[in-house]
Image (cartoon, rainbow, N blue to C red; front, side, top):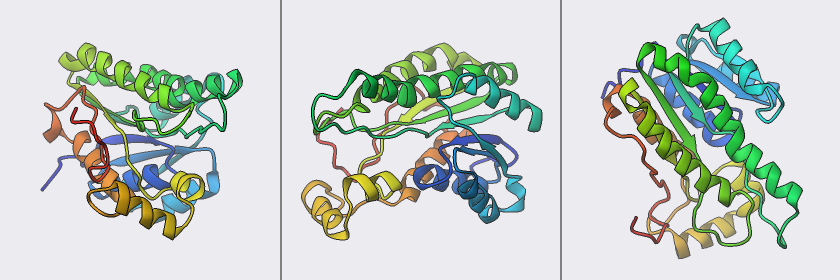
Length: 250
């Protein structure tokens, strides 16, 4: 299937590893020109070397929580590409707490997992509105908390904000969707959550109807489809990609 993405300009945050890296590769394979953003230049350079020349990879080294980050990112996109068609808000991180957590932890998590992506989106939306076309995808996380985790409330905040944004931007040809991944192989899952092959296998056998832990490409393919012109009527949605692990029917 031709996803009609050739020549579209995409920005992927948190692109250096895991889900962001996989999404960047999938978008590049479909013909997108790419800006890849993260804090670790060496990993971005490795990714850029793996992308096809047609992707014209543009590296942006940026802490998205730094003051003025959203404006700096917009300036970089306009300066290099002149526009931004697709935004993948992927940068973020889990914050499990052994107790109730400090105010500092809760505030830092809300800044990283909600406000930073919101600011970047608000900075880039006018570019999309001017051309009457755009795609915004938010990689979020579980809304079924297993423990006290400072990253859970920002997930809910993103889902509600994204739904509101989709209603405001629909007439501009811009779609806004959120993708909460289940247990999918990534730096965070492998290093912080399920740290051994035995633990991953046990989790999958108990919790995942599909019977296995997902691969980053399982997220990348749905994200890439939602970025395409073919997905024009899918907006304001929260789509779980988890092998059926989520127990709620809605």
